[in-house]
Image (cartoon, rainbow, N blue to C red; front, side, top):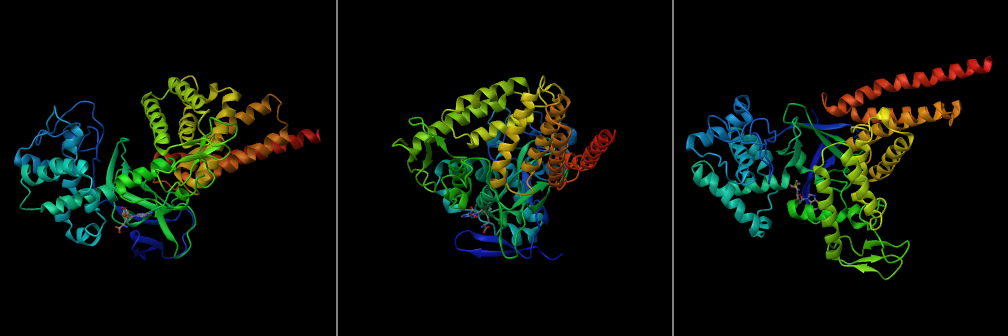
Length: 498
Ligand SMILES: C[S@@+](CC[C@H](N)C(=O)[O-])C[C@H]1O[C@@H](n2cnc3c(N)ncnc32)[C@H](O)[C@@H]1O
């Protein structure tokens, strides 16, 4: 098959990709098998067969490393990789030790073993990936821990010195850190995967591609989110696009060793979304922005008065809010979480811009909770909460249209939630005669358009995934919905005839 992208190179980013032809929105660009997958850095305890998180340690009968059960110990990803090595040298998992430090070597080892099995792909696609070895050496706190937990462990304890050079092990550590993408497994665990083609694309805080894992395989499908002209650069996003500039830039520097200077990062208003804007607490309508968003140490100034905050001060505030949001994440999905999220929204009103990224995160959470949490199921939601759900969806979409434009999962899901809220709200308004028949029909046509757009986006997700199932049922329901609106028309005409 003819490739839909070219690989180019420059001094700023190294290799990058451009579209080889015009690509339409939602078009598949390529599908790629992972070179290796496994636990990410700092991983919690998980099964080395299915990668499901483990609450207690159960170990493989052969190597004594964590697995769920015998079936998982026989999964090839475990048995042909670390299990074979650990059992041959008798290196066991220390049940009382730090799980994440011990799991640090697993994906590195799997990558090294795959380099022996598939030397062609290793040489053509993996060795050429950026590893930032010198930048990593300049961070002794990480470098020395890695030398002990991974390099020395594999080289000395696992007796791999005759198979791999120390330099190669260090290089693989770097390649994985710089190039891996997060993979959410079927068990909802977060692991990492090395997809060498996907890794070539440069980062942009407004990407024009997206990737989805194929169900029950280690393959990733990559497609465009918006139309891309021939010759234009293809970008992926290495961070969560919904975070504010300050946090994205710190993460990109910490994990990918570059200072992002994209259009979104360069604009104090983040392309008008205000995801990083604070409210002035000294004057009435003032907004506080960084004087230079490309300098993480630049002061933050009010646009109306002389109020100024140091970058360190803003970082402190952000840290407090982040901790609060992490605390909220621990609350199980249910009514308590709704109450906690609504409380935080009220608290943040005084100092965060109404569209700040932290508020966006809370809205997204609440959008999913209203209609699903116990005591808040759709049939129980009063109109005022249906209206609130719809308002949150609309606010979210305004921002997603800018930072996650086009055929993106997050837009698909939010549009779906918006259609649910509007469908029930308008129906109720019509039943209570707040809406006339004509107005109701007009509103329902808009709901059908929203549902159709959501269906078109989500049905592009891999077959069998939750999103794909929602997308398909959305597309099926659109016809029914339109038909029922038409029927309403007939009834009204009949009534008029009468
Ligand atoms: C996943 S790799 C991308 C492929 C890499 N350019 C190569 O030649 O193998 C990530 C690295 O590419 C570079 N890079 C990617 N996007 C960049 C951007 N927007 N600005 C600066 N450097 C970038 C950085 O060196 C980063 O660590």
